[in-house]
Amino acid sequence: MGKLLVFLYEDMADFEITYATHLMGTSGAKEIVTIAYENKIVKSKCGLTYTVAKTVKEALNDVDVEGLLIPGGWNGEIREELMILINKLFDENKLLAAICAGPRFFAKAGILDKVKYTTSLENWGESQIDLFKEEKDPFPRENYVKTRVIRDKNVITSQGYAFVDFAIEICDWFKLFNNEKEKNDYLNFINNN
Image 1 (cartoon, rainbow, N blue to C red):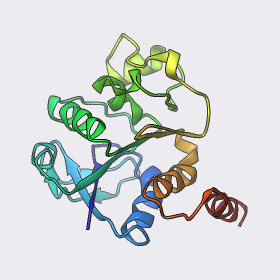
Image 2 (cartoon, rainbow, N blue to C red):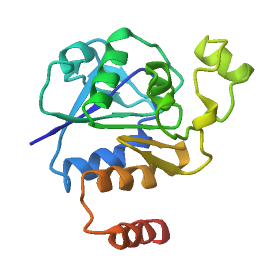
Image 3 (cartoon, rainbow, N blue to C red):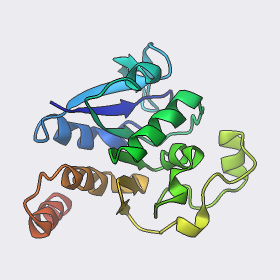
Image 4 (cartoon, one colour):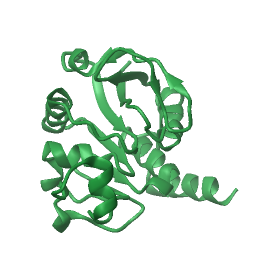
């Protein structure tokens, strides 16, 4: 059974990844492994708490990893071990999926220079500078596409409100649909019921 890592951090928007992890843990038969910088309880923006299974450093040596999911949120602490993990998975053609503000981690790792992407951080103004304590826009804006969700190479990025589309695109990456029609029918069913 392959492992799907989920990066947890304080004040993350956990709702953005719960549908994806549900589908991958059940229909996708993936082992969902929570990771964080430190092995401690992590509290999401809504107040739910999560247990960390491994540190990011420990996850670097796990050979059964098939991908990494990163939710959005306003705590953008960047540590070298996460940048190394992102680049390692990118180079190994493993799935990298981030939603809302989560693609900022990919931008900081330099992989968004190589793919088209989307993010809820459509511009870098005073509020983003205040939230992330970072003057310079980390995103390569020439690769930004204003869309709900986009997949380019092994990278899936999404707007925060499109968490259902995000989950379905992750399922498609792992070939849970037989064809594009089946994928679109499922998406239409979920969005219209």
